[in-house]
Length: 277
Image (tube, helix red, strand yellow):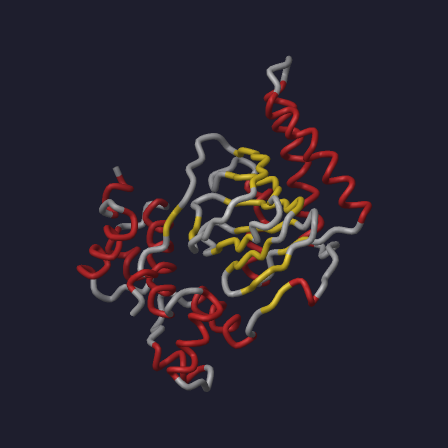
């Protein structure tokens, strides 16, 4: 097992319902695979960037938009020879208007996270985003009301575009291995079931060692580490919904309660019971 990949790091912390960042930098930096417990929209403005999200690699053009679901494991790969410019929108998972985050769940269901816009839609979203950025920095009368209205407007359009597939679908904008995509889908939909290497290899008619090597190549993770991470994240969600710890562990696919507690504490730095206080 690759111990460097045992723990997936959670990054970022969000107090308010949403937060917009404009960032521009040019530096050499190696990003690790990580996840957030909130939703993230990345609006790529300029530079040379490839984003790896759950086994797919996306090659970005200016004003491409990426939808990163809560707990989706991802990392950017940035070419430091040119400035990297982007808007990042963080959205809390317990947002009041929860219909506005349907696009993230749909992105996970489709295993597709990219929105590439035609010039007309691009212009519309550019304008809203520009106004939202101004409203986020202002202290003028009613700025919070205006900010919320513009955020809602932006997210409504984003959902319409993604749910109704109004985006440009360009097969050259991403690469992936279809067998690994199927494997990832199956794992995420069956976390409570037997997901041993042997059973997965049998199901997909793959050599055990080929499957393990290919999965690591495509996702940056060993299959074991990936499954453990996803099971821990599912158990955390269930516990926050009020499900007893032992039941949450079982529903997430952990057959050994002691091993679950140990893995949970290693990943989150606390015992699962602390969520219930």
